[in-house]
Length: 221
Ligand code: MD6
Ligand code: FE
Image 1 (cartoon, rainbow, N blue to C red):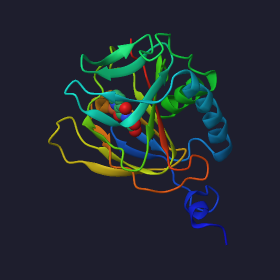
Image 2: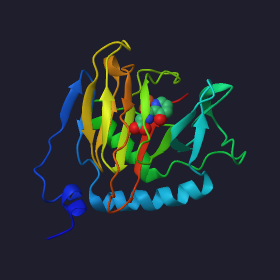
Image 3: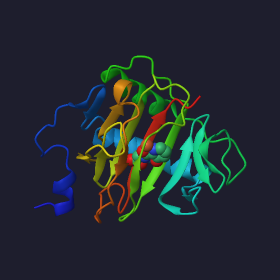
Image 4: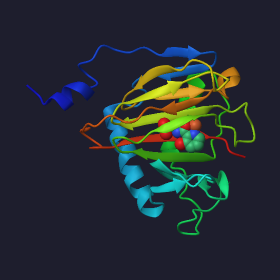
């Protein structure tokens, strides 16, 4: 009998989960990345975060975010007491962000295409690391220039509950389970939907241990 953690995360013993339309132009593509490709991605990420380390960011209000963040691609997303937005340089090193690996760019474009966005040209991949307890409050992604380009979000490691709201902050919020390898794509009329991540539950993932990693691809400029 394999360990419980293995049963929970095995992608061979669970019933298939078909693509699920969450809203207009918003799709959950479960198991978009299989175990082997996820291993290759995690190997890339281990290299990337040696160049651009995961770090906690401060909000304009002075709070420290619970998530640890880095970026690759031409632009990275940063936040500090002066505000938040995109930067061509990593403020930790003063250097440009690491290049977006072609494997990641291709994956994001393939996912976007499957959700109906044929011309996705990401120039930013935000890397978020969640430890148990880390969360992301409800927000809109509105720092980007072109809202006709979607947001593509890959989940790796520990499962999370994605919070999917509406176009108004006060709209009801749905809870969507995201597992290792799942891809979310949202754009079009859903591009400015409020979203967030519920506090990560403790656990241990066979590949990533006590971590959830989220890669969010965007067209920033
Ligand atoms: C996630 N992150 O980490 C979702 N949005 O699963 C976001 O939605 C996000 O980390 C805008 C800016 C930074 C973020
Ligand atoms: Fe967001």
